[in-house]
Length: 77
Image (cartoon, rainbow, N blue to C red):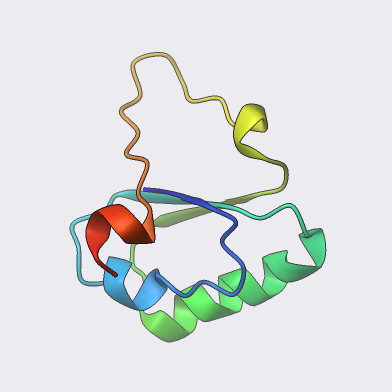
């Protein structure tokens, strides 16, 4: 799952209930990165958490990697 502008990890509690193998949290404010990791642990997120700085244009997946772009509007969260 790709979460752009992750902030404080508001979607972690929902993601913890889904069969997600990797959660990529993109947050340009690097001061939030430790808080993102803490929020993931508190929510019980059991998948691989990849916290990255930058913006959408900075994200590059591995060749053949399947990525789901999820927004609150598309999931109803």
